[in-house]
Length: 244
Length: 242
Ligand SMILES: N[C@@H](CCC(=O)N[C@@H](CS)C(=O)NCC(=O)O)C(=O)O
Ligand SMILES: N[C@@H](CCC(=O)N[C@@H](CS)C(=O)NCC(=O)O)C(=O)O
Image 1: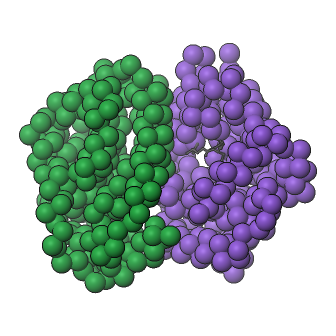
Image 2: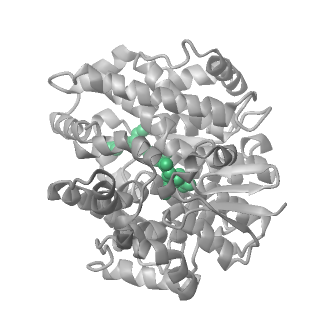
Image 3: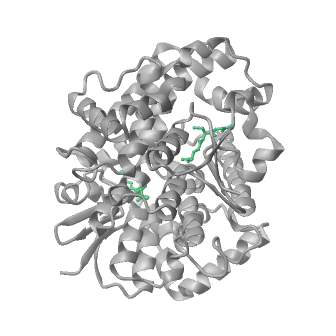
């Protein structure tokens, strides 16, 4: 049996796993878990990941959650090219450093802008005060500054001349605010050039395909309109709580 | 020049790095960065970690931040016993899974107890309403439930019968609420037994030594806090006070 990957491409960590698997010709079964339909709450998915988050992996009896753990598992099991997770001790440490830092930095701030700008208008009865979004954008911008100064510096990629898991995980997160209409690359030439390099290293076509859903706001609106009412209520509570 | 570790043992990720290095007899120079004195903001430290956080590592010209990256770097460089980061692919994935989940769960919730009970009163002279602490404890309880059910299950340690980096990173974080009187182990016998096993695997003495400072945090109530630190923390505090 091939590896099963449980994904929804609206989710940024899912796109990282998807792109990585496709790019490396890893055979897998794409298991759709449509978040907007609440499929991650199903009994069946609970057996794969009791944390009820995507991405998740199932390889025979072995199940695994968490994007970075899945990427590392696939890189080891399928022995993917060294540049993704370099065997050089210092380079590898730099990938680890980024993958650890991003959780409470790029991932946290980028998602927040996405939630406030894209999901709140679709789901909530009344908009948030504009200061909310402004505050979130300000925080994202200071995180981006750290990203450029500490991680990217003057290099082509985070660990030097080749793409690694760190670049992949970074870029999919930064496309989330872009999908919501806040272009983090505008007015930031260094970041924009890095994005081009990453897209090229992945392959434009694969990159586009993985981002089709998130970059199509109209489809997202349509999906949100069909949301199960009970789930909508739950999501509203979550948004309210997370965005305080 | 040998290995330098920049640490403040009040910080939980620093304790993980400290315990790991000591336990594995890794020779290092302990560089004390006193957070309460704002030493993380000095020009000198900024050259080591421009994110201005501890822990940080300097190994010759090589610089590294982030506790998990440092732990992994040390485990490779000093070839520490396999159980810390097992070479078995599935066991290793379990460690990675925990180390990733940790950031937005245990790590996000547990330190808030310290903020509310000690740091906010110390820095602002004000206390938060009791509902705040209750809210934080509820969030922590949810994380701990997932920790027990998904990660620990009925195993002695997160990946099975031996201690790994995952257990170490988890325990140091959970000692933060303990230090301020929110004993998360009290009504959780399974968790308490796991803690005993982890302490034993680390060595009681080393564990105590690493936690001495934090377990006496209340004595710090008359400490002089660096004004720059106050300034830096004000926005964070204001957000919490809301
Ligand atoms: N740290 C996890 C995060 C996974 C995560 O937050 N997934 C989101 C989508 S981006 C999800 O499944 N959310 C569903 C929910 O929380 O109900 C990872 O990197 O895999
Ligand atoms: N994700 C980082 C977190 C490091 C961190 O947050 N360190 C805190 C102490 S626990 C710090 O240095 N704070 C100083 C400050 O923010 O001014 C790690 O695991 O190393």
